[in-house]
Amino acid sequence: MIYDLIIAGSGSAGAAAGYYASKAGLKVLMVDAFHPPHTEGAHHGKNRLIRYAYGEGEKYVPLLLRSQQLWQQFEADAGVRLLHPCGVLNAGPRDSLFMTSLAESAERWSLNVEPLTPQGVARRWPEITLPAHFDAVFEPDAGYLSSELAVEHWIRLAREQGAAQLFNCPIKSISRDGDLQQVVTDEGTFSAARLLISMGSRINDFVASLPVIQTRKVFAWFQADGRYSENNHFPGFSIGLDDGSHYYGFPAQDNALKVGRHDGGQPGVSDNKGFPFGSYPEDGSECFAFLRQCLPGVGGCLYGESCSYDNSPDGDFIIDTLPDNPDCMVITGLSGHGFKFAPLLGEIASEFAQQGTLPDGLRPFSLSRFTR
Ligand SMILES: Cc1cc2nc3c(=O)[nH]c(=O)nc-3n(C[C@H](O)[C@H](O)[C@H](O)COP(=O)(O)OP(=O)(O)OC[C@H]3O[C@@H](n4cnc5c(N)ncnc54)[C@H](O)[C@@H]3O)c2cc1C
Figure 1 (cartoon, rainbow, N blue to C red):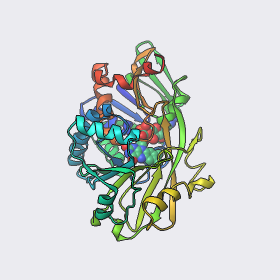
Figure 2 (figure 1 turned 90 degrees about the vertical axis):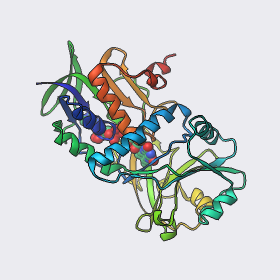
Figure 3 (figure 1 turned 180 degrees about the vertical axis):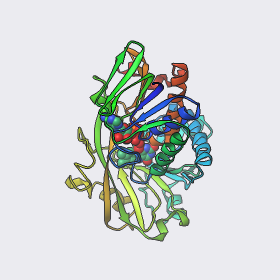
């Protein structure tokens, strides 16, 4: 059997790719070392923020707007609620790069945003305290996604649409035999016309010389009461401090508010299970200064989890075919902000499997940017 597409790594982007490719009628094989959703990669911890006014750069906005449509369609198809538009409050020192890019992207794409002063923020959410020299922008359409649930339903629908799934089966090697892409596992060797490698930073084990650094990151849940809940209109948030550190978080659920620090972490450390929350002294404390300054009413740390970022040198995604193998597409370097794009990445991979090319709009995410 020769598949149209083999998906090496069926976590976030790979699970979505399996869903779109099987929906398009392709013969698909989805492979994963574990059974997604699971806690060994980058999609666990229940939820992920989705924002459209994007401090990471205006080039992402068209991709975000398409992702939003795809999330809505996928919700309808799966029959579950995944997208929670609770609103996201962005804030940081006036004129910081993140806030400037965010304002530019909102203006260029006429996004629905509401600039607020620190006093305006305090009036609306008395729980949030921002320094007087901060800018704030509230984006009411932004919110969070139920990430584990999304992966579960991509996997389910892909299976129902006829995708073959080989889970708890680590890929041992990837090779090429003439026009065929080959994936070797303990269960056998499988061949396809096209291959998607969507293994996060594990791609380094198979494709030499990709500039991706696996970085261990943690998030933790802190004690918070009903004032911090979605029911009380408490928003998601993405807030930078003066020292350049950046924090994000979610409305509290069951009196626990999830917060994480986006920068920092432990480069080169993989294996979430081997280095669980608490393995490093800063795990429990890295958000304290932020919480004291901006959310002073939030209580102690309840529990946490470790997760994995696949960081590229510039923090931008890598979505490309390999220079010496145009039938092999890679999605990596998602650098801790890729989940919200997963349906779009899946759609792109499915189109690549059908047409053999990638859309021109992906040029900012090409591998050649590192060699120019
Ligand atoms: C702490 C944290 C917070 C985040 N917050 C946000 C956020 O708020 N908003 C947002 O948009 N994004 C966020 N992200 C980023 C987002 O979750 C990731 O970019 C995204 O989940 C990565 O998708 P992926 O498909 O590359 O990786 P994964 O979902 O991890 O999938 C990769 C898959 O490859 C499999 N694999 C690895 N090696 C092998 C092998 N040898 N053989 C077979 N399979 C293999 C793994 O088992 C895994 O299932 C966050 C990430 C973390 C860790």
